[in-house]
Amino acid sequence: MMNNSPSERGKQLPARAPGEKSISYRELLFREMIAIEILAVVLVCLALVWNAPLEQLADPLHTANPAKAPWYFTGLQELLHYFPPFVAGVILPTLIVLALIVVPFFNVNIKDQTLWDRNKSQRLMSLAIIAVALTVLLLHAGAWDATIPVLTISALMALAASWAGRPVGRFQNWLSGKPLSFWIMTWFLMEAVILTTVGALFRGPGWVWVWPWRNS
Amino acid sequence: MEKVERKDADGAIRNPLTALARWGAELKHMSRDRVREPQLGFRHTWYLGALTLGTFTIQLSTGLLLMLYYHPSIPQAYADMKNLQFVVSSGFFLRNLHRWSAQAMVLLVFIHMAKVFYRGAFRPPRELNWVVGSTLLLLTLLLSYTGYLLPWDQTSYWGVTVGSSIMASVPVLGEKLRFVLLGGNTVNANALLRFYVLHAVILPLSVIALIGIHMWRLHQDGGMYSPDSEESEKSEQP
Picture 1 (tube, rainbow over the protein chains, first blue to last red):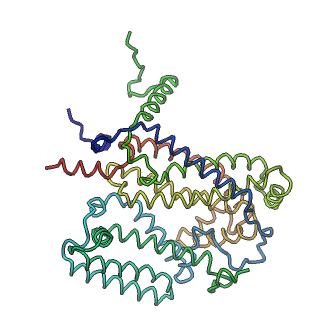
Picture 2 (picture 1 turned 120 degrees about the vertical axis):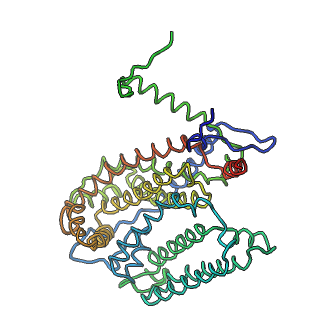
Picture 3 (picture 1 turned 30 degrees about the horizontal axis):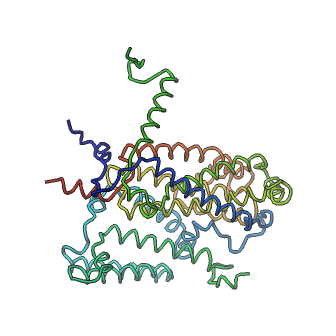
């Protein structure tokens, strides 16, 4: 009798190519152990030659300038520089967490459909409106660094749309076949990387722009 | 003679030895999962899940040893950092390894999330495991953030002050939430103790429990995701 519950469906091994072997999970675990060992050796070497930072004893009367959050939060801190705390510190992180959690519960993400296979002109118009609105909003707030991913991803999406359905190169075909979820995630990751890098390396006292090599 | 498992009316196994044997059998069953040849390679997953687990194991072992030398009080916490650096044998190494491994864990868990997304491995039946993984990402950030305060130096003090003032900007509940987290209105000795308990007890135990669920779901949902399996499933449908 067939069991079609999601878990049972997942348990079926994918079809094998002719001559391809099905291998015990232990072989994979063995390889993963070797990868962990290599990482451990790298970290041990790093710990032997590079000291973890330790500044002066905490002094509540002497404010550190700039008071920087850990590097993984400097992207949010960069946004805090441009937007009110409630927007950059509460609304945006909550939206990001919610968006991450609901990813697998939306059909548009699961179906993985190419964005440009239907209603191309309508979708291009929507993309243009969203890109312009977002850029104006960000520039109005002064967040010029946050506009870089918006402009880059919009330009790539427009290029992908122009390549769709035409015989072009392998990379162009690959890019034009991507679904909406791919573009949103890539935009989000690009924002995260750029804002984090700017916040962590390019901000000095008073949160003004500082070149990292002139920091010391 | 056939063995009969003793179960109560609600079906639960009350004998701890039987429960332990069942766990053993389940683990053995998990190790019998099979994978296809291409899934073995580094390219498929970059072994990111395993590498993240590796850094977490380093964190647990170095963290346990650091607890032997650390007092969550002011100004002793800072003095303990200095002692680790200059007095305790290999103390600098322990602290450095804990610090760099923590950074690696945060980075790896982010890349793991991105890689799982781009491979499409979040799709049903693996949606619950995606949610568990997202929660683990948040807990990793919290673990790292609570550890940030413990050295009690200028960076940690003001870094956490910035973070807690963001929390206070939540309407209505913000100030109260900050008071609960810090044990006061500012970052002080109570905050240090609370962050220590969160960092050394509550968060690691939660992460261990969730990693257990993450691995169990991985097994239950059919082991490692392979895009080919989805293709073959699609082609079988009329």
